[in-house]
Image (cartoon, rainbow, N blue to C red; front, top):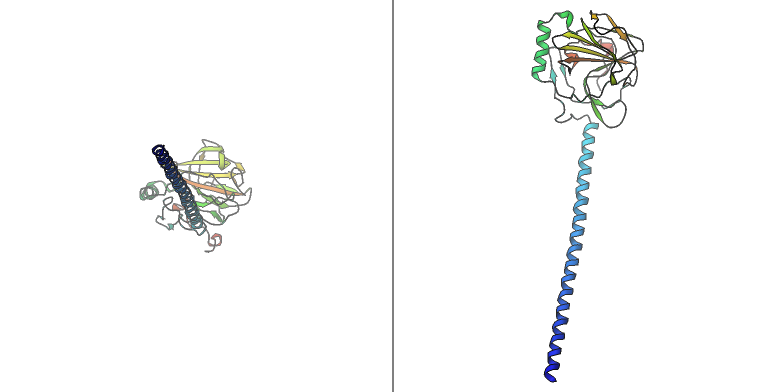
Length: 265
């Protein structure tokens, strides 16, 4: 019986030692899992914090008037002036509007050269070099703060020229009317084909005075200023297009009267 007693004692000792080893392994696994859990939580919090800082910096860049990287050209140059529409306005302007365009391609040298070539060879009467309406420029061509509020920016494919409801909109050049009807965000809109791929658009009018197919001469009445369509107040949305692509109207327009030029900030 003594041998058997020793044998059972040996077996019990082995079993208890085995349980002890398993317990230590389980404890080590639990500790490792807890450490990994807190590491994942920590890295996630750091990632969220970095993303928030970057997002805030992006908004700050807009608020400080920093150029929109890779979205707009640095400058557009023509024979009369240098136009920088890469710096969007940070203020809300009254009497603004027009469609929110997705055609935000910067003008390149080829476009500028084509505009110059057209002006050099075309009949001057068919080049829109006269203001359709004389008034303060509320919004230039290019990126601007959304006039309907919020922190968003949008591409404005024309110019917003201030005016009173009922004031006249005159044709800046000869051409043929190809549109004269309600057109989405433009409201009541007239579009004139001047030849050589040039067209002009006149939006937000309270009344249209021409019809599709009409032959237009420079200075002819097109309609009356209004606030139809996507607009915050009476004004004229004036747009110049080359092969149905919006370009800066100032390529052809003379400087506006000095009394209408807003002082530099």
